[in-house]
Amino acid sequence: MTWILFLQSAMVSRKKVVKAGFKLSILKSIPKEARKAEFWKRVIEEAERSRRSRRAVNLYKLNRLTRSGDVVYVPGKVLGTGSLDHSITISAFSFSKTAYEKLVKSGSTVLTTREFAEKYPTGSGIKLIG
Image 1 (tube, helix red, strand yellow):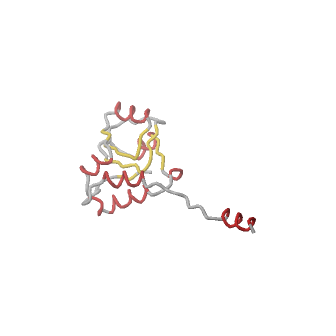
Image 2: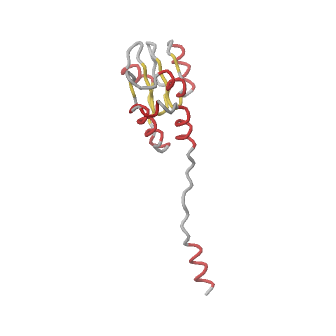
Image 3: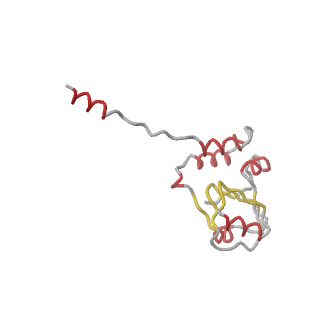
């Protein structure tokens, strides 16, 4: 009888507890009126992805896909491989240390997601790279 009770207690399903930390932090950084724009809906959707499947973009790819003065948002991490030979306005979920240093050195403007959302609430004219 005790063996049956032990098996029943061992077969209790264990739910994985997922913290809403990252998505919630991105959601809080976007003003409420901007969240209605399709661009910001897409950014929130990208924030819901697992950490393993988030995008990583190197500087050489940004250099190839952008021109001077472009406004870019990367829904993932910007990495420092390569170089950037023109200035852009950029925001991302995160930056590596070398990528941040190279972006500043190239004369680019690096914004947080909150600053980016306040400056570009509609998301029009922004390149989403990743």
